[in-house]
Length: 116
Image 1 (cartoon, rainbow, N blue to C red):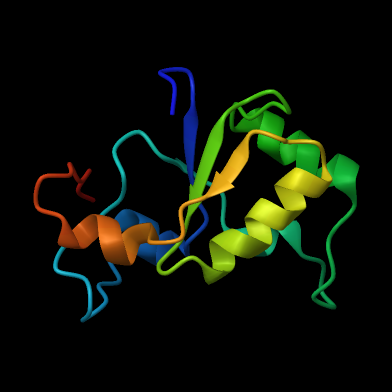
Image 2: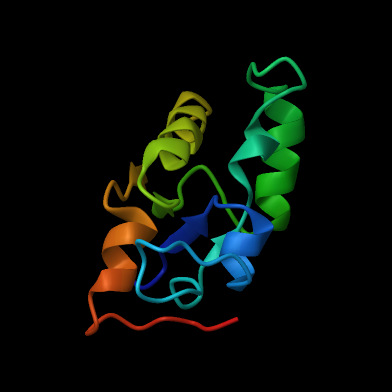
């Protein structure tokens, strides 16, 4: 990913701030410099995707633009897949799903972690 790329963390607030630790993950925290936008922000109360305009307004407030290179992650890739699908369907064509997500990242001691 380029220097201008963004890392989007779509986990829960507790996972993002490190207060919820998963037994399978040796470290808690987040990818350094990641932007938090919980995956449920893409969904309405029925579980369908929310109105595109309302989502885009929130994404723009986080610094995301349709031309941005975005790596999306969660714990194991499933929630990130929902966010990835929503982003791609909204024209964020440079979005990617980091399938290994936090489960993989936290297990690699050579990768930096931003603590809570």
